[in-house]
Image (cartoon, rainbow, N blue to C red; front, top):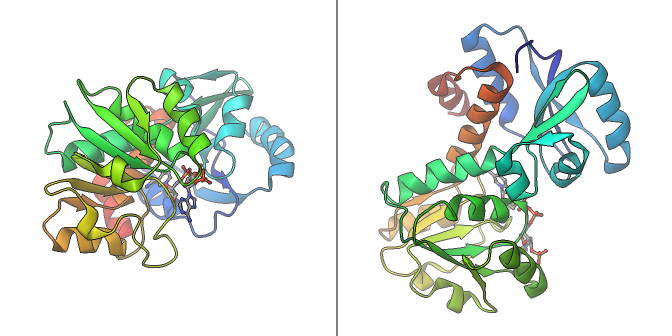
Length: 268
Ligand code: NAP
């Protein structure tokens, strides 16, 4: 992007709970950019009207549940990674036209690399969930040489559909036990543990030495991540991914890197 956007928003429903304004506003302040990142709670039936207003304002921003796929469909152009993921979580306008990117994939990539200590090649990934976040995980995994994934979802048809988009990388399986066999990285891409201390996978079912990546984030980490770490697993929740997808979005809007330290401090 060249010109400064007229407005910077997070589109979603609900969005009030989002941590994004905290760290994006810290990044804007650190960069001396005179904009405020605001949440915009938009019901699906109001999305098209809202997009017309945002186009007139030359707005840019992020998109979250439930609008990621809808924004994807409305963009006149999308980056290759957004096309592959089938979802847009970053948008901007050029001459009134909507453009989209997916920075969740970069967030997954950075966190997985840290958890696997830089060695993603040959990883065996057990992935739980088959929604947009799971697709972002698979976009990252397919870049790793020799990596494979098993995919478990409570509704098998959705797992089969997503796996088919990433064949032959992914095998859909009908039980958690099958998914976990030989896994070196176990990824939760469901909302389990978001509102309570439920575990997506019992700790004693985790393969020995497997790293644990929970896309869910909570103020004091998720109970699952804490418990996994206590039993010797390398583990991270979704906060690092959230910050990294936000940093990549900032780069897309402003053509420069944000102050990641300022973003991190705003969260702690
Ligand atoms: P989504 O498209 O709605 O998909 C949710 C997936 O979770 C579906 O496969 C769904 O299964 C499964 N699921 C939902 N409730 C479940 C339950 N109670 N038990 C078992 N499976 C359940 O959502 P999404 O966008 O992929 O997001 C998934 C999670 O990732 C969310 O918690 C979100 O907060 C997190 N996320 C984090 C970041 C980050 O930056 N850290 C980014 C994106 C997403 P069915 O298909 O059977 O319904």
